[in-house]
Amino acid sequence: MPSNKPLHKQPLAILKASSCSLISHPVILFPFCISAFIQLLVLEILYFAPRYPLNTIFGLIIERIWGKAYLHYPFNLTLLPKLFQYLQIVIYIFIGSFLIAMSIAAIIKVNEGKKTRIKTIAKEAFSKYIHIVFAASCMFMFVFLFFKGYDIIYQRALQIRSTSGKFYLLKQILTTGSPYMYLYFSILATTLMAYVLPIIMIDQKKVFPALWINIKTVFSSLWTTFIIVFIPSMLFVPMLLIKTSLTKGFFSPDFALVIMVLSILITLFIDAVIYTSLSTRYLLKKENE
Image 1 (cartoon, rainbow, N blue to C red):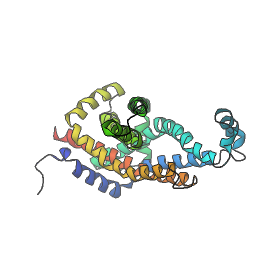
Image 2: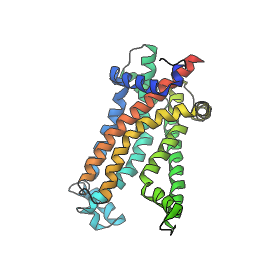
Image 3: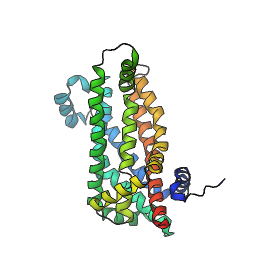
């Protein structure tokens, strides 16, 4: 039976409609594809960093910070995820957030029934670039604080000496389940900052008013927003299972590169669905008011 609730209060319907929008209007997905391409290019550069001619630039840095062993197999592949993670932060703040804003600009055009051109949406996103970068920095700091808080809990859990009982069970959950806890905290942080970029692009607000409106919007529809972020994010769980198997030696170090490539592609789809859904929901909410 059809629900009597307004569409902006139906997270599953919004997710379904947003997925259809991505198929019907590929221009919305295009900025996310650019972001994935940039990440894959950076990953390729890092992979070949220990080899000539890139080792003339990166070799000295890697040798000085981590040691000469990390210029050679298999240690170079164990260092690769860490280096890529650091660069992903920079890419997200200065490039990824801008491309997400471009996608939101495309959603606005589609919603208004206007013709969408890459040049137009890029220009609109660039006009808000400072606010977008500042908002992305705030989002990163928010996630960072969540992770640091969990790191403290994780270290305390390692000190539990019980070998049975509820404290031992708690230790196992907090330590062996750490990748899933990080994913959960990432979902929670994304939920709490969900509408900042949509508000900047849709309402043409500066970053501080956008943050305030975001807080009011999130807490007026916390459960709906959480579901919109949570369901697509669950697609990343199989990658965490594979990564856990990799750390336990079930796969060769070379497989780490395959996992990173797959992670980038899966993240592309997850982010596209989440931000299309959040932007669509915010537009529907405004229309319903």
